[in-house]
Image (tube, rainbow over all chains, first blue to last red; front, side, top):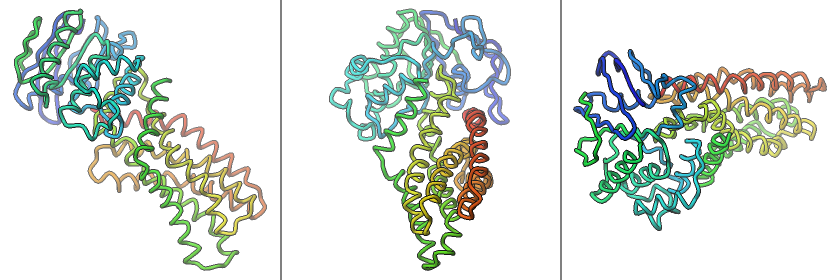
Length: 201
Length: 221
C-alpha cells in the first residue's frame, strides 16, 4: 500500500541517504533503525508529506502522496518528536482538537476511554502543563487509540514511557497491525510485535 | 470548515486561560494613546488634529505585540505539523488563526477606541468614523501581519525582523485609516478613504492566507 522508490534525502549540504526503497502492506510494520543523525526523522517526515524528497517518489495505493485522489492524509496518523499538545488545555480538549484537525468526529466517551486506558483517570480535566513528562506522552499516545487511521508513522514513540506504558503501546500497535493496519516507526529498542521488517539507514 | 472553527475556538480558549496576552495589547494601546494628551497638554484644537494619527499608530503597534506568537507556539509544540498534514487544506486553518488573532488583538482595540477618542476631544461623528475605520483596518493588520509572522517563523531574532518587515506594509492602512477620520473632521466626508480601506482589506483577505500558507510550508521543510 505504501511504497517508496529511490528516495534521496539531502539536508543542507549533506546527503543523508540515497536510493532508498521500502514498501509496507496491510498487516506489516517497518522498523526504521540507524544511528543518531542517520536521517530517521527526516525519512518519517518525507513519508508524512511534510517535506519533499530530493529524488524518488512515495506512493500510497499506487498514487503519489501529493496527489489529490490519494486521500493519503485521511489514512495517515503522524506522530512527531513534539507532541502537538497545548499546555494550557486539558487532555480531553487536546484530544478533541487533534480529532478536529484529523477531520474525524470524536465522542467524549471514546476520548475518555482512551485516556483511562492510558492510566489518566482523574487527570482528564487538568491542564496538560501540570502533568509529568511521561503523562504528557501518554496523552499523546491516547490519540492513537482514538484514531482509526490505516497508516501510523511514529517517531520514537517509546521515549519517556515507563515499562507499563511501553507494554501498553506495543499491545496497541500489535492490535493495529493485526487489524490490517500499517505502521512505520523509529525506535532504539527491539519490539515484540510480529510482522515487522527492519529498514537500516 | 469544522477544523477552521476548531482552530478559532481553541485559540480563543487558550487566550481565556491566559488572559495576560490580550490584556497586554489592550493596555499598551490605552497607555500609549493616553500619554499623548498628557504630554502635549490641554489644547483641544491640537489634540483633535493629532488624534487620528496617534490612535492609529497606537493600534498598529498594539497588534504587532501578539503577532510573533501567532504561529510560533504551534510551531514549537508540533501542532503546526499536524495542521499541515490535516485533510483540511492548511490555508483554511491559517485563515482560522488569522481570524482568532483579530478577535483577540484587533476587536478589543475597535471597542476601546471611542473611549480613548474622547481624550482627544473628538465629537460623536468622528468617533463613529474612527471605529468604522478601525473595524476595516485592524483585520487588515492581522492579515498582513500573518504573512510576516509566517515568513519569520523559526528565525532567530525574528521579532525585530518581523517589525521591519510588517510595519512598512501597514503604511496604507495607516494613511487611509487616519485619513478617514481627518477628512471627516475637515468636513470632506470619510467615504473615499473607507472604501479604499475596504478594498485593500478585500484583497488581503483573498491573498494573505495563501501567502502565509506558502511561507509556513517553507518553514516546515
